[in-house]
Picture 1: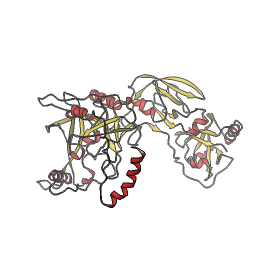
Picture 2 (picture 1 turned 90 degrees about the vertical axis):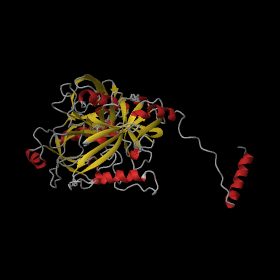
Picture 3 (picture 1 turned 90 degrees about the horizontal axis):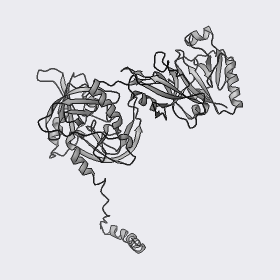
Length: 510
C-alpha cells in the first residue's frame, strides 16, 4: 500500500465510523497447512471412541465420575453442570440422556447401586483389533466397548495397563470388514512450531479433528515419575484422552492425555505422551501384560548452581547421587553418594529427571555403562539393572528433617549459621539419631541464615564437608575456613537425618 493510500485510509476511517459504515479487513490466511484434510481422511477410521461402564454404590459421588474424568484431564473443573443448549438443538436429546446416565439413581429393584458411564478415545495400531488408550479412560471399568468411526460398537477386553505412564492396551474381535490401523512416528524428531493434528471424542462428539502446533517438548506437569509430555495448542477437551496426536505424515507421535483448564474446556494447553514412550510401554503390555522397568537403586538430587560450583561442575548438569540402596544394583557397581551421573547407557543425563526416565526405559538385566563425575574426574561404572517393583518409584532425596526443634543446645562451634556439636549418647537420644549415623550434629540454626533457607534444622547430622568426612565440630570449621581461603563461593555438605537418609546441601560461604 502506498503512502498516499495509507494516509487516505486513516482519514476515512473516522468518517466511516461516524456514518455507520463497516470496514471489512482482508480475510486472514486459513489456519494450518493444506495437508490437514488429507491426513484426517487417511487416518480417521483408525480412531475409535472408548465407552466404559461401572457399577457403583450410591455412596460414591456422581460428580467424581464423568466422561474422561478418571484422573487424566482437567482435574480442577466443575463436572456436575449440564451444557446449556437451545431447546431446538439437535444435541439436546443426546446430552439429556448422557447426563441422566451420569447422575444415576435407584435401579428397577430399588437398590442404591447404579451404573456410571465414561467416554474417551483410542486408536487402532493393529488390524487384528488392538487399541491404545489412556489408563484413566478405562480404570475401574466393569465393561469396555470400542465404537468404530462408522458407529459399530464392539465389546473389548483389557490386555494390560500401566498407571505410571497412564497407558492401556485393549483387544477386540474385529468385524468382517478390514480395519484401518495407524503406525507410530518418531516423537524425538518433533520440532517446536511443527503442525500436529488431534482426533478424538470430545464431549462424546466422535471423529472430531483439531489442529495446532507443538508448543513445547519434555514438559513435566508433576503427574507421575516419568513426565515427558509434548505440549500442543491443538484443541483438546474432555473425551479426547487416549486419542492420537498425528504429524503431517499421518504417523502417531503422541497420545493425548491431559489439559490445563480452569473451566473444563480447551484453552490451548494440552499434553500428549510422546510416541517414543508409548511404543516401549505398548510392546511390554502386549508381551507381558505389564511393564517391567529397570532399577538402579539410588536416591538422587538436582545439581543446582550452588552444588555445581561446589563440585566444580560447569555448567551444572547430571543427577547427584544422595544415597545408594544397600540391596540395589548400584551398590556392587561401586556407585557412591556424591557421584554425579552425567551419562547412562550412552544417553546424556542433563538434569535429575533424565535419569529415572533412562533407567525405566532400559531392559531389566541389561549391563550398562554409567558415567559419573567423582571429585572432579569422570569414571565409568558397569551396572546390571534390577527390576523396579510396581510399588516402587524413583526416590528423590528428602529435604525435610524429622528431628524435633529443641531449645537447650550444647554449642561447641558455630559455622555458616549452624550451631554444631559432636555426637554424644545424650544427643543421639535427644534427636533420635541411629547408632550407624556418624558425623557432627546440628543443635541450632540461625533463622536468617542460608542454612535455615535450605531447611537444615536441629537433629540433622553433617557427615561430609566438601566430600571429606568430619568427626567433630572442629573438623567442620577447619574445612570451611580452608574453602574460604581457596575462594570458594559455596560449601557442599552431605547431611543425614536421624534415620540415616542422606542429602546434599550447598551453603553460601560468607
